[in-house]
Image (tube, rainbow, N blue to C red):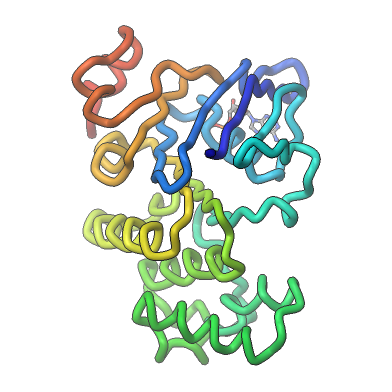
Length: 237
Ligand code: ADP
């Protein structure tokens, strides 16, 4: 009962970005995809989300093959790098967007958006535009926008990359809290070992499109499986 990528290969032209990757994320866990730049982290997330079609392999959710489903039918929320909020929409409209696309009745849209803004303590920002928010506030809105349609899976691509250390730490707590309160299975991409070890229940270390190691943070940290993982973890910035 989990979200699983099974033997996924993805090529761009002749370049193999993912080479027979298998990853299993148990339901309810918060998983960090870790690895150097270019190791295939974003590509794997996009394959799971249905934003990239793999050359081979499957994506399963609770044993259902969802590889053939479009991104919208996968019940997956996606948080892009650099927030990607709609600049011409208010905070309220940003969070409501996915619900209106899914034709939720307007009354339910209002209730759901209010509930989510309250959860991240930004109710009073509802009528403002993203330009009037701080980086941390924008990212909290991006988080609840992805969670609004009640996805079972939340995928986040370097969600805190653009923020300074203090705000990053705050957002890690928000991610953990939202993940727990909204009962999702979450996978987030990071190149920051400390961040992965601090927040995640499980870490997956990628290198050159392959999984080097996968396990509980403490296991991976204490028993790196090979020299690559040992060197990579030794490089904590
Ligand atoms: P990471 O997220 O670990 O930095 P990516 O998944 O973004 O790595 O990329 C893995 C490799 O695949 C990189 O070498 C990248 O240049 C290549 N790649 C990713 N997307 C594309 C694309 N759309 N076209 C061509 N090459 C791509």
